[in-house]
Length: 568
DNA sequence: GCCGTTTTCGGCCCGACTGTTTTCAGTCG
Image 1 (cartoon, rainbow, N blue to C red):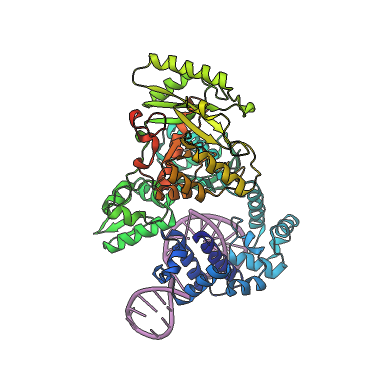
Image 2 (cartoon, rainbow, N blue to C red):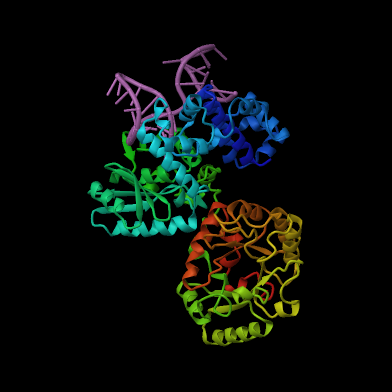
């Protein structure tokens, strides 16, 4: 059982205890243990095997026993006891904003309502306001919360939230009475899906700034509005929260907004060990207080500025302190992009335009990997058209200086595991990416064996978007990525970090595993236009979240050192 | 249930905010 699953069960127990009206301090202990487990670098199973569970903060003799029970049986007596006393469906109600354990318990006791459907009906009928502690306003808020729950059950995908947030941010920065404005929250950490967009600003006229946002053309609903903070819902059903902070607290506010909780806890601990106090209002000690700039706070704690994507409470503070944090990957490390579609298949830009855009970004090379013949819907190339395209690339390359377009293909891995072109065709190419675009419903074994077969083909350099997921839309096909990682390590095949923001495939968890297995990753945009090359920033974010250093990335290498089979 | 003592009990993060009250409880970040 994975760490996150154990952590989730412990959190569930804590929630149920609170709803059941048991000691809230006890519930807190369960939550603390859950946090320790999910933020530990060592998997809970390994800790259990080595008898080291007690080394986790907040795990004592009783919780150690329960964690072992969960690992052995998948559940524990405590959880069973609670679920027989409290309907599990009450847990779903906790996801509604404004509803906590106390209120859920209160509603359940007074009305017997035990699920969201019942809650919604009661709120509509105006019965809910009869529960002590709930008035008309809360009833309305609960109703609104349920509606939004339906819209964004899994949160807003990065691909939607970030462009929206950057657009708003640009508008705010344009205002004469706004001094600073920045993204905070999970979005700043590039978490795949976020609850809301957090924006922090300093302003000489906070009220006017609130007016500006609440009347913005993208805003559909104003949820709350104070003098220094407001919360709105935009046309795409994304909640945006804007907070105005004092200039001297902008840095610390940004730090706390960005999180994560685990990261902040580690920073606070480090402050304590140095006789300082770090809190939401600043870093205090020696009569002075730091809060204006984030980097000053890190510096005062004897740390380099840790990039937001690494602030997940996975030991990054300790690693930064002893200098073992990997070199932070930057956009400038990328020497090229190995997965781009031209108008020879389903891209919208011509070869020349793509080459120009790549040169503008300072790249040394660009891998043109159009679709292969089976993918007719995306203009897949016949062998004949592929060769004509290659000739066109050769011709262009002759006119460039040191820059080079690479003749590539995104070859389909067919349903039987064979590739869409014979080996003698693949041999003519500089870069071969093999991807699955069909047969998504095959069994895990079948899909895995297709991926593995492709990785074993000596002409394949990279496995493209290995899990096939589309964030917020489809979960991807069933595949044993661990096995693919093992084979890739064996064959020297690279795996892709597809930087398209609605893919981010591989995600950070698997990238970490691949890195640990010694597998190279390739950060590719899969761009279908010249502008699409800019998505590389999302790929960088995934790599950072996985602590991937430049050495582990194929396309940080210059052209003459690219580990591609044909070029080697 | 854990933890750390003002050391075997009593607090657990805490301040802002808001709705519901009539001085405060619950939620959230």
